[in-house]
Length: 558
Image (cartoon, rainbow, N blue to C red):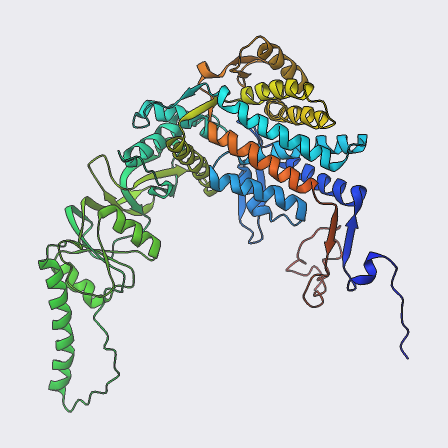
């Protein structure tokens, strides 16, 4: 009879072999808090204009160099269950308002760090949670009072630029004026009078070479493609869009043709040619002078397209076809039929242009209010352009948030310190044990200006005491001056460093929810992961000291 090994008594007895479980304050709560603190520590150094960049290499070996918290977290693929909660909160922030992801992480990390102190002092978890919930509610009540200005007219370029500048600044410090101006032009040009704004309508086309300052903005669309035929530029175009290959129709049924002599063979292929010519001619006669197709272009069809002076552009992606249809107001036809005037799109000019050494096809609208605008980004490396694209993404999202709610709060830690000050005094007035948690919630806000200061090489404590001093005198809009020498404060409303109200609102809400969710966990039970035995790792080269690298391709000894 096989030897029966008894299991340890207790909880493990019920579970399968290989299951892990942690319970209680010491094992579960503090370990979770530790993991979240580590995560917040990582992204905290990337906060603000002077934040450091992270170099992340994802599982497909693509390199990212960025200080955008959302991207860093997306590529890191965090495994720890508690840290995942905070990552989800920051993803929610990204979807909700598109900016302020790092704020969520820094703030949630600070909340948990301070909660740990309270729990070690002997408060129970429920008291901490209750205190945090009260303080969060209070903070969201106070926020509207801290609004220092609101966007009056988003159709005004100068005003839109000023609003977008702050969001771009934290990603691309030094280029913010140039970029904010470009983004504002793109946003304002597609912002309709009715007031609904779609982020997808600002496209980004990245082309290597030159410098960032050579970037430009166009009404219409830019594709990194070449034209198929000989014609490279058409003015005042009528566009026929086909989502099928530009080729002759293939019959549905299979048929066999018996050809008895050479004459029949000639007639057979000639019939096909005539048919193709008739189709292309019909499209040209309908008034179209540009054909956009979603599939391959047959040589025969191309020959006739050139004969009838049709410009042929091929787009591989369905999405690009749809967007183009939206831009030029065309309907994508599923078969090679003659388009009616309603189905054809219109565009002022379509031309092949060369940007750097890349051929691009431009669909350009002359009139101001196009449905889609494109930013052509130039940069010396792909990584740099990816980062600029993220800055643009933040800028466009900021514009969208302001369309929803025009209110703005002072940036650079001014809002946070004011909230901290008011919540601290609110905590003083609470009688129960939750007052400690409320005070800690207020203290957690200090993490934001502190991160800004430390990333700029300024002592955090000095700055925070200075900020408190000016806020106690009633200057609500005073924040940290990044460009000043040492811990200097200045009025953020005058400096024009403003954050949208919704970014702060959702950031505080989501961070608090995430922190509370993490604190509510008192047991972690992990079942044994599914899957067979893991493959043994390859042995590295004998001379490598613990590097996780592949063995050398060449052997040193022959």
